[in-house]
Length: 243
Image 1: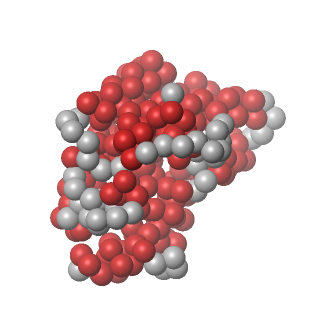
Image 2: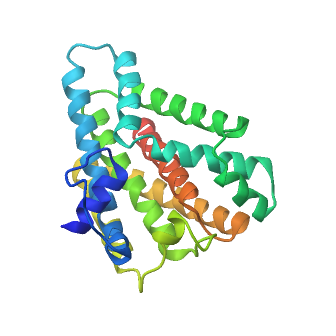
């Protein structure tokens, strides 16, 4: 139960137990729940879409869902996307890229990446209607949150400290496969064939991102994990929109 609460409080604004005491192993075990927490976030978004869909036009609904999506996750992953874009877009030198990620300022690459991310989410959500929209909202957060679990399980942390170091490692890949199986189950139950295709596209996107991170900085950081969630959410939504 502690591992689930850690995942819930880390990935969303929900704080059912503010003074939760946990150690490093608890934090590592919480990764198994990332997809489930993503599915719960998706259910919240789907419920909001269903209720608001009765009174709001499609474009307004899509815009509001993008805002709710960001608020529900404290815009945490967008921050990681911005830092990663600034670091990877500004320099090809590993150490300099890591220094840029630590900088609290957002540069032009980061700003452009966030704008593109929000614009794509808005457009993709606006293109979906009815059951397809609800299924996409549930599946995308669940599938995307399994990706950083695998990246952090397969790649070394690029730094010896920080969030990346905190969620790295663990013996074997049991937690990763539990999370992956949960994400796939959610995708198939709620999305059917479209959910399965979305899972495949997210897996390919995650593989590509993992290879890219390893080549550029020798591993991953907390920022790159956040960026992977944002990119893979778009990949999942794209699968539903195309199908």
